[in-house]
Image (cartoon, rainbow, N blue to C red):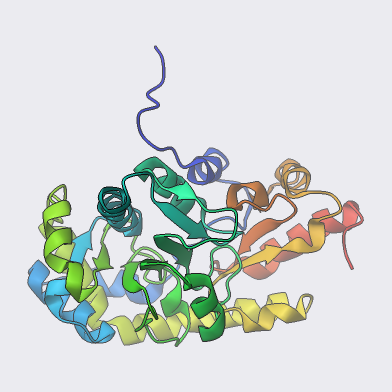
Length: 332
């Protein structure tokens, strides 16, 4: 039977799942199974409604609740926004709309944009849409306001995936400059709530009604997921204290050997010290020794690898990774 190629595939996720269970996992970017506070809060949850969850998310972002659209995760949120914007701009300009994407970047953002009909802008010009993760996945850094303004220059819409923002105290982005700002987020990363499948998109005020009409594919979030997400949201201060303490502890471990990593705002780091060998060769060498990292080619930069800092086992896992690099003559 021929495989179905009528929908986008996300090779990075398939790569991680294919190698799940290795002793030293530096590829998982979420906190699933790592947080005692989450386990405690989910033991008993009270029924709630999606309107309450939307209101809580809206208050943190300083927007009206009508601008919050609940989804089954950030991937669905990004997909709905990109398909909406692709249709909107294709009608306006009468051809394939253009998108500007940073490199390296989280691959499903680029893959989905292409599938929605965008043409990736590789030369100077003004795109209809600018697209990025902030903090960056895979680099773990926040874009400065000046860099964001330069990246957005000339675009009509800016879509920012803030999946990792809550690992730091950075506030939500408020302004897209000259572009209309779209934000997406999820409970699956900092909250380690992969099983809930709850995310959201925040639309600009001027496009709420148009996006509501375009997002008719949303079939509602299961009541149990809404109730659990509300329980986590009410306990967010407790959860984020645990999350950030773990993250900062792992950052300190990494920064002992890679001082520039001390500025990370998200639990991902892109190791470019592998450029003489290449990310794929290092990843294969790691697999043979039970160490899982993500090859940089998935992010559009094949000269490095992404490692994640979410696990309590990170010090041992990172030591195993450094041992692989030492055997290959890659330690500085």
